[in-house]
Length: 392
Image (tube, rainbow, N blue to C red; front, side, top):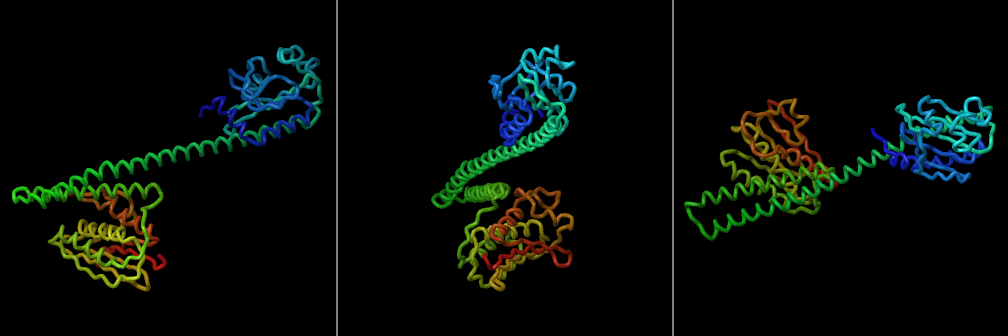
């Protein structure tokens, strides 16, 4: 991962412990200029500064890296401690103390947790100081290790926040996609359906009626596909399918209407209905009807074409139990994935739809605080059961 100077300065600036570390170093050593420096092969940049010398270097300020001892620390990965540069056997003739006019100096390397070199914690003063014969070096090296952990934690936090911001932006784009899909597709489809109905009603013509009915069926089918994609998108955004929970005195009629609609599309199939007294329930009438429509359409499409389909709805102890049963078995390997999007039984025949029906039905159940369960055996066929708790 590449680290820019600006990013590293910002990272150090967000670590609240850094000013305290510099102040402790100042008090321990007596050195009046302390800094955290970012050091690379070709740059020395101040990331944090405590300057009581009027050294003149601010945060973001740069030095020619080859004029500094930090350049050598970067190469050797060892600390440098100088009590009195003018008398030090290694540094009395070194260009750095003369250039920056210091006698006492200490600098320890700072590594990232992955082992790469970040820079140094350093301090200097024009006056000599007793640094070598003390615990100052080990203390500053401990500060360097602490700073390494703080840098990693801060960068991880920033990466997490950046990822979260990107996810928010992605979510906004998804919301825009839903809005565009709902408006730019549903409106034309509505216009097509309305125009076809007007033609059928005002200009009946045996020669064209079949074509008009085909247009109406196709428009209704396309509208249903759009609705499925909208519901799928809402569910995948994490908010679930929206429901409007209210008293539902006519749920019986809504469910019977669903059965009637599907029966009219499949007149050759036998659908047996047993719907009891459903008074006293609170639910989203349209969504529960949609759930039944999806379950019933699935039973017709994937059950035994010669077998009966049963729809049962009743209230037990104040809770709704809505079941759809068909002949035919779902393989055990398929059952755990049945309510996932795009899941459908394997078939060599082309199939209509997007494979979202059962996923949407399960999302409607969850949005109600209910549960959608499936059981399938060779002897008893396949039974989908929606349980709506009485607390709803």
